[in-house]
Length: 114
Image (tube, rainbow, N blue to C red; front, top):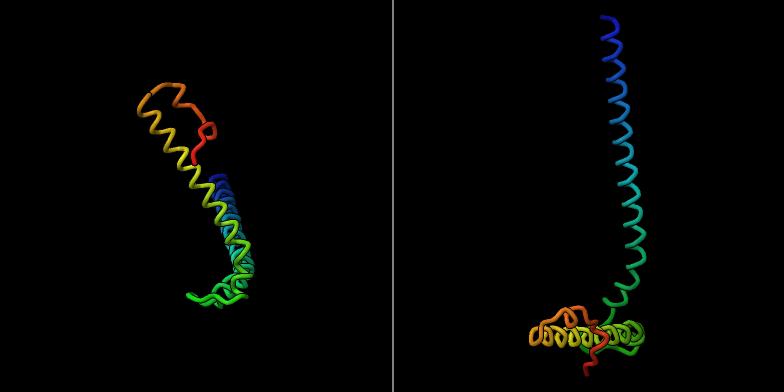
């Protein structure tokens, strides 16, 4: 009888200890996430203020200087994506007209589309 009580008290102690460790781990994870979120918001805030300060229809010289480098990058990325989509469409149309294993595994970089 005494061994049963001892075993049940031991198991209860282990269970409570595991639950306490789980809850404390969860709380520390949430605190870390909150710190990361706050630091991320602090970094984004100047960029948001720069965009919010820019007039929507007639941009000033300052606003175009702030957004000129990202705009160039965006345009290049857009052109690259458009060329990739065109190459993929060409590959698909060629595969639909002449289905073969060779046409299926041909890379889009081997097709030049203007």
